[in-house]
Length: 361
Image 1 (cartoon, rainbow, N blue to C red):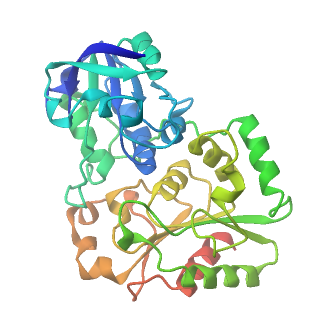
Image 2: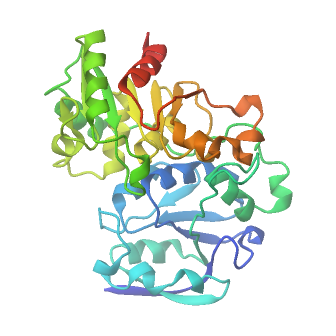
């Protein structure tokens, strides 16, 4: 069964969304896990007289906004991210170019249809969330901050706390039920008394940002274990790295990915990762010693500063002048990341270990 609704469909740059007040807004956010985390920084700046709900086809990501302050997540019933084709019309039968401020009829399959009807949106906002790649100046220097200036009215922007690190509306507290299950799974290889390091070497958007073929990651794990026999290592993606891999430990848990990852983060003592969803989540959460590995991008393009993190930046980034773009050159010291530039295009285990030592000893 499919519900059909008439909505005013808008993009960030079509339909003058920022001027809308006192209405129900359904945010359609068919983007990656890291982008969902970054939306948590955008949400507190949106017009407060509106009501907001957010969804996509892929409850693995939607669930990161469980308990979010000011935004209600709506669930499609489809765990894996997609465009909704398996449930009927892709993207509710809407095309991004149709989002121009005019009224459109959308088709929303069940069980999402009932939730959307209950919310009764007047506006559907679908932004392609454009990449800035460091070309916008402070205070709109990150991908999320750049979108803010399109979604928030100019008079409201004048009083927004943009000169401070953005507060994230995500509730990072894990569900007690999910935390209990995660603890049970972790006890099989990382029982109480050990320390857990999570390593994320691979993303899904661009292979050039990945951490090699696993060789350096395995060398890092060896170095970490040489520091202390208490360390246990969970890989997010590479079965040849560490003591266990995420999908084998947690795949059978009947919970969306984000709920499981919230619980895992609560038990993580060290995180090593490339710029993909897990790293962005950990940086937004805070409280976890974190080493970011930037082989093809720069942290100034994406994340708010985090006192618990050190970012290693590969030589390719400097060769391309990515560190000399406005996002970096216009930031005040209060927004600076802790960065270390390395001489190689790849990320060597010894450099990662040195950063981890600085954070954990």
